[in-house]
Each structure stands twice: as C-alpha cells, then as structure tokens.
Length: 120
Image 1 (tube, helix red, strand yellow):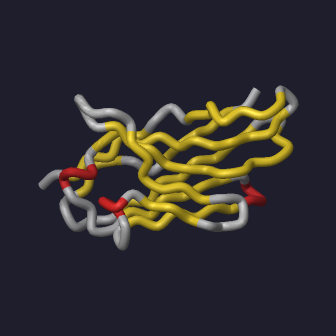
Image 2 (cartoon, rainbow, N blue to C red; image 1 turned 90 degrees about the vertical axis):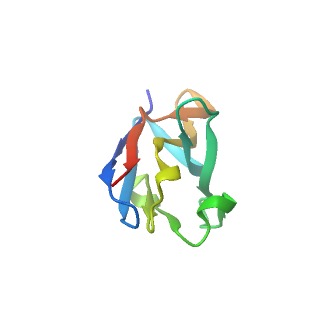
C-alpha cells in the first residue's frame, strides 16, 4: 500500500514563507510526476505546481515567481517552497504522485492535505 504524508502547513502573515514536504512510502518501484494541488473553501481543487522525475517543472500563473517545487528522488519526497505568501494562497494543500508499485500504476495517490492560512 502506498502512502503520501504531508507536513509543513500552518499560519503565516502576508509576505511570509512556508515550506511543504510530502513523502511517499510503501512498496514503490518508481515515481513519475509529483505535484501540489490546493483547494480553498467553495472552490475546486487546482494544480499549483508539478515536477517530473527528471526535474521539469510547471506552475500555475498565480504562483509563478513565488513558489518553487523540487524533489528528492532518493527519498521519494516532493517539496513546495512558498514565498511572498498572499491571503489568496489560503487553502488546503494536497500532494499527488504518479506511482508504480506492486499494485501496478496509479496517478490517484493523494496526501491527507495540510492547511495553509495566510492572514495578519
């Protein structure tokens, strides 16, 4: 069974920074793309940033220049460094990974979510 465990959320003032981490564990053979999504109250879940195994990245326009996604393939971990945070970044952040495991391939692997609140 594959698990994704997130950490690093919290309350921060506007202009502040947070770093999210998400570690995958279980009977994993390989992880392709990893990404971060977020969902604010009353809104649909949206892609924030994604990274391929080779390190190519993709960002939502709203976070370009402020957020940086990275990964450590040896640790099966993806990170999201969030700088210059704004109140509109407030949401539950979820990590996602495309994983080959003993159960086969699945892109439907999600963490439990971590709350990020940007407020003064």
